[in-house]
Amino acid sequence: MALPEWLDQTPNVNYELEKKLLLQVLSWAKRLGWVARSTDGMDFSSSHRADLVLSKNDQSLRIEVKSKGRATRGEVRIQAIPTFKDADYLWKPKKKKWEISIGGVAMAQYDDEKSFKWLVERLFAR
Image (cartoon, rainbow, N blue to C red; front, top):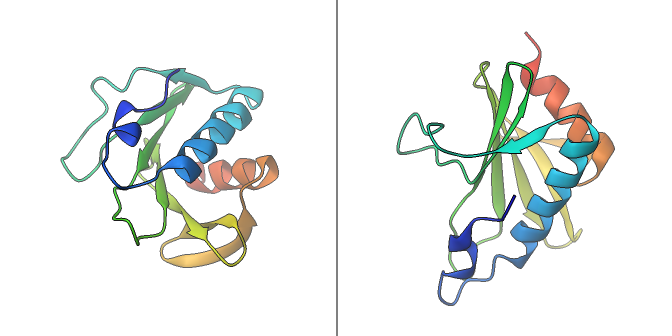
C-alpha cells in the first residue's frame, strides 16, 4: 500500500518522520496478521481522516497523520473500529522517538513492534 500522497505535496513542511513511522507500522501490522486496505468508506466525520486503514477479521485500524506547520512536532492518530478508542504517536525530539499517548497521557511505550502490539491490544480491549 502506498503512503498518502499529500505528505509530499505540503509546501515547506517535512513529513519524513511520519512517513517512516507509517512504513514501520505497516511492517509491524503485517507481521501481526493485519492487512492494508482501501480508505474508501472509512471516514465517519470530517474531523477523522483515514490515511491508512488496516483490517483483521472484523476489526480495523484507521491511521491519520495530523497536519502540521513547519514548527509543529509530528502526530499520528490510530483509531480502533468498532471500539472507536484512539491513541496518538507523538514525536519527542529530545528522545528522537515516537511516544504513545492514550487520552492525553504519555505511556512508557515507544516506536517498536512490541509497543505497537501492546497498543492494539489496549485499543480493542472491552
